[in-house]
Image (cartoon, rainbow, N blue to C red):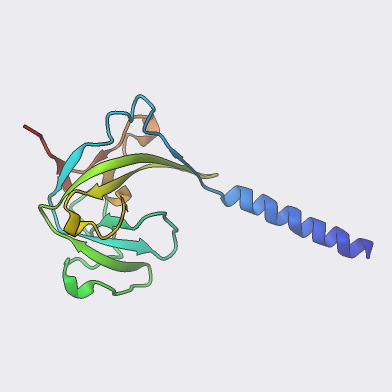
Amino acid sequence: MKWFLALVGLLALGWFAYHQHTLVKTAYVNGLPEYSQLPGREYIVERDCYTFTLKHHKSDWPLIGANAPDASLSVSALPAEVTEKNIGKETPDVHILDVVRTGSRFKIASVRRDQGAKSTSISFEILFLDENARRYSRLDAFWIMDHSHDQEGAAPAILETYAVQRVKK
């Protein structure tokens, strides 16, 4: 019986260590000085995109992105042509939920930092301004962002190949 209890304890300790190693901590960093000016900024979509989920990576919100080899960040698992016919289709890596058309407007709702054992990433949670286009309460903009400044601690930005900032008059 002692060996059985020792084995159960060892398995529990191993599970705990594995869980801590793979755990991702999420924090909303809107209040930090380098991110405080970002929430509320509005953008206009410059290229057709998909909303989708990745099958091998859990995210709190559906993602937005496109298979755009000309952009510095592209989702090669998505079809190159953005069309409504692909809504609901599944590839080995993604599930396509919807299409976002050029001209759609969105704003940054919040800035999120996901910190894992091996990496840290910053992402924007966005919200479409048009009620008809708002099928999801929020979307994760990770795949349409410029992450080149993440390592320096500077705020990332939306890639202009995907969307441009709306200037209010």
